Length: 417
Length: 141
Image (cartoon, rainbow over all chains, first blue to last red; front, side):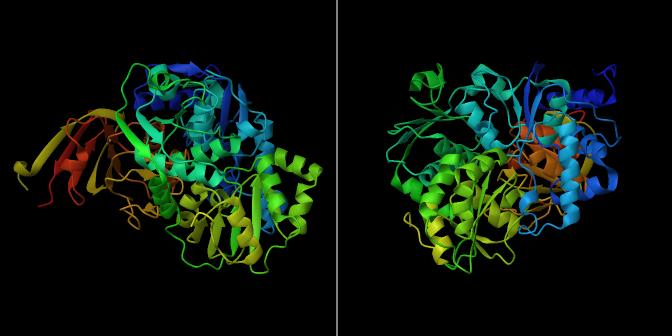
């Protein structure tokens, strides 16, 4: 491919993978048939670029690192699209002008023409892309990377837009990092001395663990109750935000950690730590560090994108109540899950309460907030980490029930506080 | 400035090319997406020690990358916006930083024989020779 016999786009893709592999110090590339990335031009900088230069130019520059515009052929592997910068069905509410929706639609049509599946979510593993144990993947999106590595036993590094784009065209990715057995073993032992129950508490635990181990591989022992998909999703997303965790083990629950010994191979932990109530409290204070004003304008749920079960929980908490006149409640989920919620009647419960069920994007990624938002509230430690930095708002963090209560009353108070 | 002020670090090429400029040093890892404003090169992460400071046109000396996999695309946008670092010197290799350095087209070196976070201070003059894996530091004082 590098010699150009398979066309200029695959040559550029291979050239980028070789430069990237050399930068890493990788010995070779490995085959992959499962790539999750971002190809569209839906975030503000890219949609301006796309409007000026066209979509092949966007792919050439932002997916292949090529200033020269080359014609992009169909992808050669199973490829899924991650979350986008807006929800075309709620564009007006999100403050997105019609001409931007037009660029978005052009981008989506282009993406599908290339053969990329429009899952449009940060949680593809909840809507049909579930890699198998040992499968070599090339995924972006830190919360999805950590999920498929740790929970599913698939093998990926946190790829970027450019390496994922190049992998879609070549079916190759550097054989480095979490593709290799020895790098998947645990480095730090964390012994839990506290019950971790709610999704929010799993988020706090992840936030603390990420802060402590940064980019290492934590092994958690002493987990008493099996966490469900939503809890693991929030735990991983938080650990990948406060630190750079891409792989972890929950002894007795995740597939590469039947025992502590298996999780560490023959190695000893670099460090052993205890995690108790005080540590979770510290994480709680850190994720709430930007929030002061108890008058909440905006409640955002769905980071990472809500599962159908989480939508059901939100509906149970919301049923028969109304969102306060001074607040907005937006819930984000994959498009496929939104269709199930429509069929099941969840969407109606949400809209009857004065809230909105949205898809394809989130507030931090799309920079979409209700007009005039100054104080937000979320049940995701990841979103609480990013939203204040990106949008300059205060942000409260608490349980899903805290968030629904705040949406109904317009005031923040937390059962964790 | 005499040679006595000059310190030479030897490491490994990440991205080739030669660039020199003033150093901006941080002991905190840097987030790309949600950690910087790529249009100005300013660090925006809430509890980061460089919050409000820009790395545009500086030699960025830091431990490594963290956070979202949008790291490379944020630094990619920073390059196109003219707000990228001139060069990068760092300790911890990750996919985020490797790809980020590649698409930033900034001469970059890692695996140095001395810890650059200890040797280099903000304001020092630093020449990064990516091809040879050499970092020359001229202390400001």
